[in-house]
Every structure is written in structure tokens, then in C-alpha cells.
Length: 99
Image (cartoon, rainbow, N blue to C red; front, side):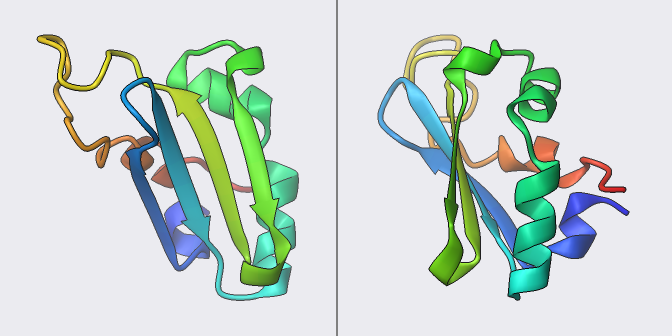
């Protein structure tokens, strides 16, 4: 099963000009607990090709949300930036296979 089939919504957005935040919205506690066990810095590092030490994962238990912060591949608004709002980065995570 892919992550997008398990959760309510996945979105990404800017967290300043140098960082991105990816939010995973779960519909219940059971799904949330599964996600926080499966979404690791190792998986994020592999998917986004960034070092584990640059990844932060924040589970918000009361809201069933997992927030992931990663560095932007290019500074927001630079000539190499192809996603000014950071909205397309969550799509990569949607395809993650959850066993």
C-alpha cells in the first residue's frame, strides 16, 4: 500500500527560503501510530537524497499529524527554483510503500 492510500492528506509548503515542511494528516490514532513507525529519517533520506542529519520529524499526537522538515534543494526564488511555494515535494512521499 502507498502512503497516500493510508492517510487523509499529504501537503508540502515553504518553511522559509531554505526549508520545506511536509505535513501528513492521518484520520485516526491507529493510522498515525503506523505512520510514525514507518516514516523514518532513513526513508526520507533515501527518497529526497539528503543526509539524515538534515531531517526533522515532529509527530503531533493530539492532531494525528506528522510534520517533516527538510532543506530546500534550491533557495526559494533563486534561478534554479522550480517550485516557489514548495507544493510539489509532498508528491514524492505519497508514493512511499508502507508494509
